[in-house]
Image 1 (cartoon, one colour):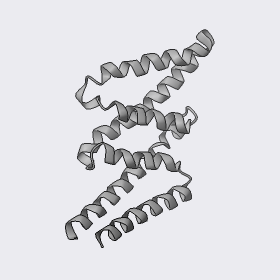
Image 2: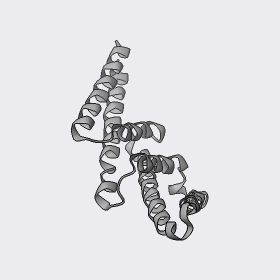
Image 3: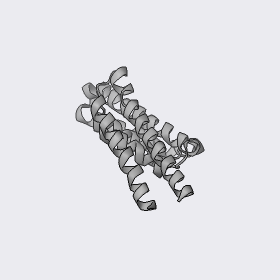
Length: 154
């Protein structure tokens, strides 16, 4: 019975997430990436928030990489992009020394989201990345809460 209820909660959350994502035109894999990050980095909102913020900072780093590479392209050509990647990703070795910013996988999830979706370098398209990212965390929280309830009751 417990396995059936677990499957029911997981299936319903996943189906609802996909239905809403498709209906809203979100990038579904971004939502699921955020969902899995909740489980990887904490399984509670309080513990997860620093990782979530680093995912957002990874998206910002992606914007910086793309923007700075565009600025360097006229001078350095195709070498501008790898040079900026080298500098900014290399800076993570130093940034990760700060306790609140030391989750390098979270930074890279943000980079994956940014470069995977590859939005226009304008505020609205970049901010739109937050919607499926936040939704993924909300669905993970709903799913996790349901599973905890089942584990307590059965």
